[in-house]
Image 1 (tube, one colour):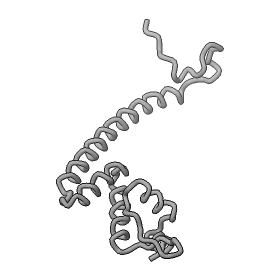
Image 2: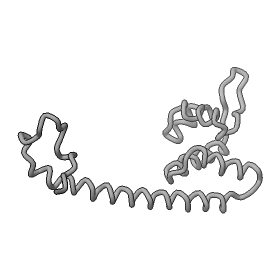
Image 3: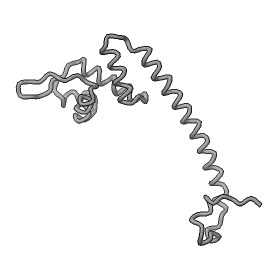
Image 4: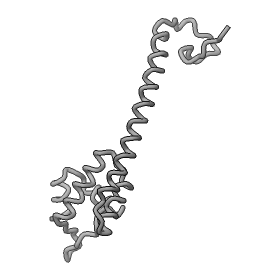
Length: 135
């Protein structure tokens, strides 16, 4: 199939396919006499893998590492498992950070709704973010 057909089959732009080729995620395609790229079902399967792995949160570098393990003739299952464990730990840490941020925002929002904008002094930008002075 030609690049446009491949792109249509996956719902992605042709420039994405070319980008993956430049990054080494896809093998160099066979070319017709007039220079058109010709792809096979193996490339289609690899592109589906790339898209699915991206949806799971893997970076292109991580995806490339999985592809390289596979291309070296080894099943990448343990490598993928390790990547997913790391990704899950990152997600859990990010959720913890977001919960902390949510709490901090709520603590700022409650008093901000009770403040009078007229009470801001000329030296303050916004007294919502001004630390309260301890006495």
